[in-house]
Image (cartoon, rainbow over all chains, first blue to last red; front, side):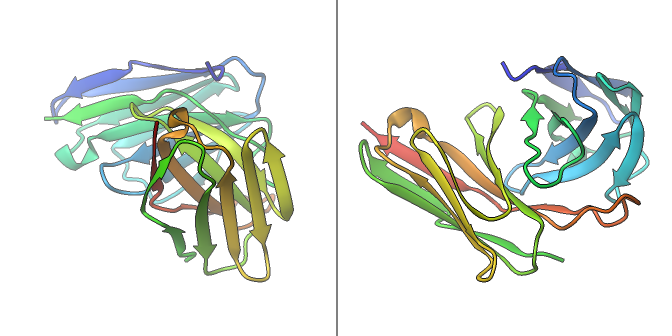
Length: 115
Length: 114
């Protein structure tokens, strides 16, 4: 257990559905992240939050909408996704936004399949 | 854009062998991160370093900033070390948040046979 939990662990959705992924960290960290890992591709950083404020958005399509209501919770709202969005979505947290020796702690991921 | 290359892509070893995984990058960085990903997807952060060498148990990570290269070593390898090892480089960070880039390598699949 890393102290970062994600729900659901698996999700199957149609292209017209709206769903949300949830991440919670019990580590007292100030920074949280969403990553995407597609089959046979490197990890991609999607969003970075520091103290509930979005500080990085790496050209992610608007059908992915993050929300950070407090420093312990992070959501990823999904709307009208495409089959190519099927991937493992990982949440992580760190004490401060990545710099120097700031280690990240990862959740187990949500395996998303878009039909 | 920083290009991150890991080698080898696949590595098979016998239990007890000394393992080395390499990571090279093309643009100067502020920090480098080694991660371990087990089957099923769970990721564990192994090291984050910006210079020199770090050791944790049987794992050692080194970085040479001038040569833009890092190595991850595993001593006395064990089947439970079987996983994908991922290198990621961080290109700076400023308070404005406009220069924050984390680039990942494709990973090295390590299989340690008993």
